[in-house]
Each structure stands twice: as structure tokens, then as C-alpha cells.
Length: 426
Ligand code: PLP
Image (tube, rainbow, N blue to C red; front, top):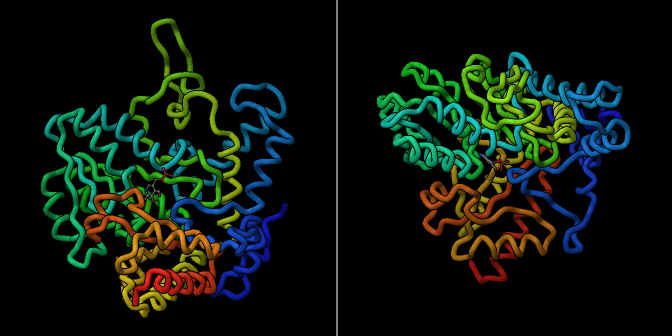
């Protein structure tokens, strides 16, 4: 199926959301008897028919293992898998596919760096710098590494508005000359967009390597790893229209070359003797065993789709929706909002976390569910952050993508009023 030209857009300013929605079969279904309103794309995105069809086509027409078969359909599968890496390299501005390692998700990408680069380079007493804004997947791997090596884990503090990172804290922490700085590009709780380019520049001055957690940025805005200057960039396919089980670690070629392989097995070797092996070239050195071939092919189709719409347009669209959401939600009594507000919209992605006074987010989400609206509730896999900004340690969250529109926000607002009525909150 061709990428829908209709999805690309009506005018130069707005996405053709009605056309885009037609590409997502699940958005025409019902949940609890109500048309599904999907406001949980920060957790995972829905999949367009173009991605579903690309995967089906692979299984129906050229299913075979890659890199091994000397026959047509294996060559076709190898080419499709490799081509998806070319697409991803272009999508994030990497130099070549040598810098694109496929993994399961952002979590695995960060763990790969901690376990391979970290194990080889971090010494007792070294500092590892992250921030108070991180997802658990950018905290726990560093805790494990620090414990194993006797290294020190430090945190960049939130600023006084509890929206961005404190510049003072950045400066103080960098004075300790950390070995690595690992930082989220966009917070999955606050929506805050960190200036990772500036932070990378500062970190480089003190000799640190920089890892950017791009789980919430790559799907939603133009990203260029060379412009950022980071050494590593991690992303998850499932958050950017691709299937689950496929993600990527971008690494600068010289840095990846310097790292030992993490897993041993087929595909990651050039040759094997009884007592030794020669590792394969990049990126295959880090991809042991049979790859997630359908995932790679699906990710390639997802990137085609995102490119056909345009990442700048997606960013602008989500910005408008977020402004609209902040405007509407800020007017509701006893609803508290977090992160940058309307004035800070340039520093905010399409995520709005909120709390309704005295009501547990799980109760909020259950009422939303009865209205056919899918939202997230709880600690959002960022317990230290959520506890730091809200003492109950749990929040409700709506998050947007290219297929959302203002009427989805209106549905959420209506559901908030319903929650307040049910729980008798004024
Ligand atoms: N980092 C951030 C900022 C996230 O929002 C998420 C997932 O929500 C992750 C990392 C982990 O992503 P995954 O579960 O796909 O590994």
C-alpha cells in the first residue's frame, strides 16, 4: 500500500489528522462501547496500516533469515533489514549504518552502553552523571554499574519551577568531571525538552561522554545526533509507529569500535576458533543471534510514514495540541498541572501530567476508560521524579501524537469533569 499522500497534509500549517487517522485501524475501534480516544502515545504509539502491511508482506512473501542464505528471499530480507538501518541513520542524522545498532528498546540500548562501555571504562571513584528527570531505564543501569565499579552516581537537580534542569546544578556537577553524562532529551512525565546540545557541549569540555535518551524525542520532533554532538542516542521503535521489540542505539563509530561486544554468538563474529573469535564489523558486532527482522522492517516502514508527514509538522501539531490542552486544563478547579506552562511551550513536548485534588490517578484513569479514553496513571516509571514533584508519587498523564486532535483534548476535559462529579470534588 502506498503511503497516503492524503496523510501528508492540507495546508502548510496543519496536519490532515482525519486522513492520518484513517491509516490507523485501531482508531476506528471502540473501547467500552465508546469510540477509542488514544491519549497514551508516550507509553506506546499506535501502528499505521503501512507498518502492519510491511510486516505481513515480509512473512507472506520473503520470510527468511538474514546474512546467511545464498538464495533470493534471504537476500530480500537482508536488504530490507539493512535498508531500515539506512532509513534510521538518515532519520537521526547518523553518518552510516555502522553507527546504528538494533536492540529491543531504549532500555536495552542504555544497558548496552552501561554494560559494555561502562564495564570497560568506568573505574572506582569515577562519577556518572544523570538527572532527577530520568525514566527508570536511565537510572537503574547506572546504579548497577556504579555499584559494581565503586563509582559515584550524581544527579542534576530540577530547577526551582520543577520543570527544567537547574543550570547551577549542571555547572556544579560537571566540575566533578564525570566519565559519562546520561540525560533524557524529553521527559515522559513533564514533557520538558532538555537542551541536550548545550549540555553535550559543556560535558565535552570536561571530557565526559554523553548519552541521550531519545525515547520521547525521536518519535515527536526532528532529531540530529551530529548536531547534538552526543556519543550515544537511544530510541524505541514502538513509540514511533513501529512494532514492539525493536529499538536502536546510535553510537559514534570510533566509540562503538572501542567497545567490547556484549553478547557472543552467531552474526557478531567474523571467525571463530576453539579458543578465540574475531568480532564482526560495526554494527553487527553488537547484534548476536538472529535479529528481530520483522521489527527492523516495521521500523523502516514507520520511518517512511513519519517522513511522509514531516517531523517538523508533527512537532508543530503536538505543540498546538499541548497549548490547547494546557489552556483547557488550567481552567479546571482543583486540577494541578506540572512542568512548563503555556509560556514555556517551546521547551515542552506533547505530554501533560496532572492531578485532580484528592483523587488517585488510578481512579481517574478508570473513569477515563469507561469513556473510551486511554490515559496513563501512576509513577510513569520515573518514581524519583514523580515523588519529587508531587508528594503522593502518582499522576495522571495524557500524551499526544500525530493522530490526535483537539476533540480528543475536549473528551479528556469532559472526563475530568465526570471524575470530579463522581468523587464529589468541587
Ligand atoms: N526513556 C523514556 C524517557 C521513556 O519515556 C521510556 C518509556 O516510556 C523509556 C526510556 C523506556 O522505553 P522502553 O520501555 O521502550 O525501553
